[in-house]
Length: 444
Ligand SMILES: NCCCC[C@H](N)C(=O)NCC(=O)O
Image (cartoon, rainbow, N blue to C red; front, top):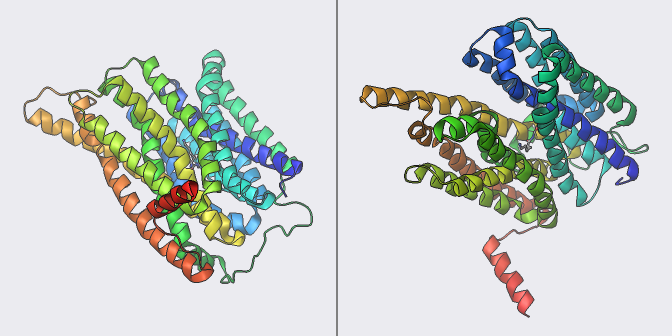
């Protein structure tokens, strides 16, 4: 445990996740090329991205159950192989349905990767470092996003569709070989999937139900729900049109603002990892503080008279960069409140939260934009579909997710704390009381 070998195993797992994010985000930079290759409109093209995200979200719980059955090595290797095959199909696709089939495979393989790497860490590391590892993994994954924006976009314009997507298939194949050679579920001599002392029901379905019912799993699910949907909505879909069409920013300035979110996430992730390892009983306060930060920042942006100033948009992209790693705390709740034997399913449940909320929020924002546009045209106003007046109303959809998420976090936290008191005798009081005690101790 916690040996040099552990770091090698984790490093290869993280590489497989970087490759998965590269596969996932490769389409984002290829939209104009895809429109020209398949001769379709942008609206129809969005099915490519939406289908992939839907497959990813739907597969989380089945993949989690398989993960508990077969272990992370099999799942990460299968994910890498399926994504490589998917990218090969995309590379050779001559029409949209074939490309959609390729992206379905990419979503399927991607679904198996992140939660398996998180499960892998629990087999190779012990102690407070484990709480930080999830953040390191998520942070490493951001490199995949940068790889798609810079070298992949460059390659696409140099060598064209088939060769560039073909080279992503080769990246997937290399990841597969590395995983097969270097990744194992746990060190030699350790049981491959520890059973622990908790009595578990027999059969995958009763086990899944007991995982879903655990308040700690629900705390993880709602944390992920509340904190991932908003940055995903902004980064994967609406951020760019909001900045360029809604607020009139140059494309390069908009891309610069979006990359601030990625860089902030890479800086803040490890800091949140250290904070959650140091103060495990205060993780939910941190999560709720970030939800509050999102609510206040978005309220200022959409409520600002006329247009929000540039400094406020910089604050917004920084706060969105903090929310991404904040959502990763959800996996730490799953880890600490579930036995290792069902951690795969618990991570799958948590991951559904943020991705289902993102998948629901993206089209609803579009729908509200449409409704507002029509209402304004009917009222005789001169209005563009993507203008700021429409965006500032449509983006309020986020408050529903943020407020619902905060309420559900508070409910799940109350039940989790009750369970902690009953089963382990641990009493967690309000945070202000803990701060007052800490200040008193310092003065004494
Ligand atoms: N863009 C921020 C990503 C943060 C990682 C996130 N918490 C997460 O759930 N990742 C799952 C994945 O498959 O990427």
